[in-house]
Image 1 (cartoon, rainbow, N blue to C red):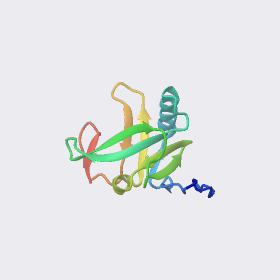
Image 2: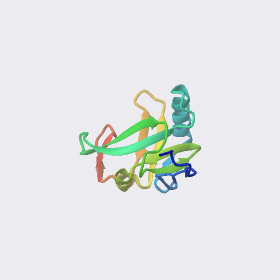
Image 3: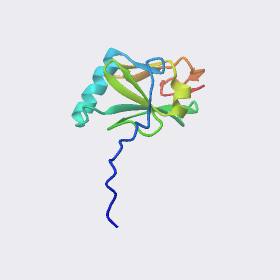
Image 4: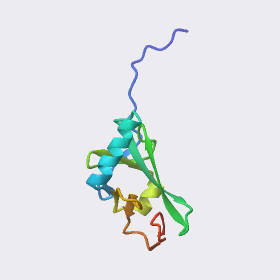
Amino acid sequence: MIASTAPKTTAAPSFRLGDERLVKLTANAALKVSTLLTKQGRPNGVLRVAVVGGGCSGLQYKMDLQDAPASRDILVESAGVRVVVDPKSALYVTGSELDYVSTLDGGFKVKNPNAATSCSCGESFTA
């Protein structure tokens, strides 16, 4: 039998679009993420923001640079940077702002209105 000659259909994206009510980047954070994406050769990449178990308060943030959104992700564009969040993490980060501070004790800082408590290092929290 000869292979089908039916036209190929392009699948709809498997991610959803969100807005800055989910997560927002400051200008400093956007500049740092853009610089890191460019250094990694991923100028069109995304910043993944996730919440995982661990840290001294029970939950901690995990950030990673990736090529594109994954299935079921929520994609937000903030300050010119594409940010993706998985649906489970979205429950914990909604309304958060990501900043970057370039001091000795700086780095990426998350201002999360859902955090009931956080540890002194600011890298873990409870909801």
